[in-house]
Length: 166
Image (tube, rainbow, N blue to C red):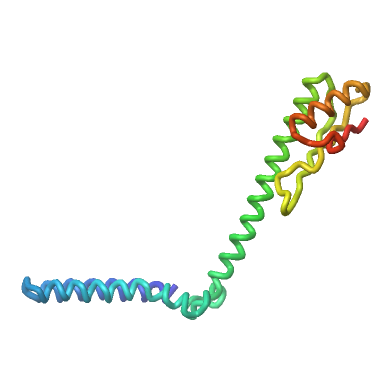
């Protein structure tokens, strides 16, 4: 924290010093040159921590020891969050597919007690591997074959990917 305070203090001092110099020089071409030089010096002072970050490969020596590799930690944290978000999206997608499969079955007169959708992974991410409908007692084989055909048509799956469990 002391380094941050010193950095801000240096910038403020540079700006104040530049303002005083600018007021001391009469209006001329020299004043424009002074503004240019002071602007470059202030930009260098602002960019110094960023330059230090790139020179030390993400490890900034003027940060406290616990935060020395903050760039690497940020990348790791970003990847972790990406994985969590991907899992949440997949869970939401799967829930919506299960609701749709259940609604299709109910539309054909079959009341499934539960529906399970299994999604692919890696290269087949988001593709449906299979749908399992656990049918309530009293469901007939005729009804279940009609539901299986409707589900396979709607989801563009092979009938073997629609599992009817009594």
